[in-house]
Length: 263
View 1: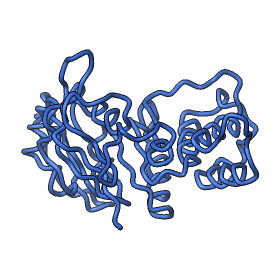
View 2: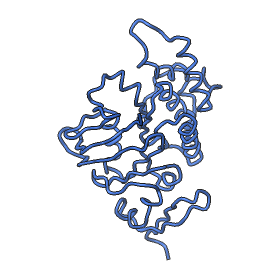
View 3: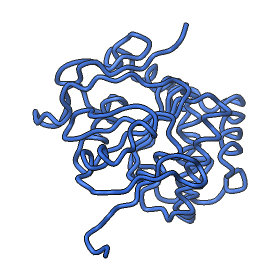
View 4: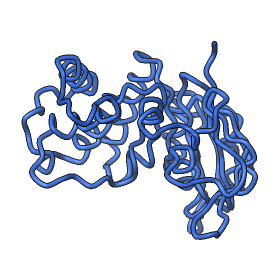
């Protein structure tokens, strides 16, 4: 049976303030999807709702036809992994110890890590290219290395779906490309469904199989990058005049802002 992950007539927000309004979308399974939008548009709110960090005021989010808010917490954690924005690192913890915490959904109260757990942890470290950092303290690592650690922690949950909230924030462009390349490799090798919030429109166009564009809490466009990243949509989403050309490397759309001081 093919798997499904859907958002149906979703209204959600914080403290009774509705941010998302009547969101309907269906995620492409085993592909990379990106949620785009300006600051305050509701991108991260949508991702949090899809991870069940906030509950809908109305509507539902369904995984394989079942509302996720009805699933037991550990069962949901075996199906959906989340890398939040700017996660906190426990002081003095090693890479291997932090990654091992991703095995929590599979542990009982009185049982420690098994040989199988250690093998899964080792495989995740190898997949993201940080096996040599296993005994290093996380707080000694670069930003890009830390993001790989968090991705490895999400991977050891062995979920089919991975949600990432701005995984390239605060990283320089080389690290941004490195992290997105790593996620693309994981998607292809493991068939993991990846849904992430990104700020960079051009990187989104390069790496996304499918894009959801959010404006003022509503879904205003969706589809391939060539369908969504147009001059008209960039103006609607960001209020920005731009020129959209073809990226000479990836052949995907590339946005060039016009700006105010161009002669």
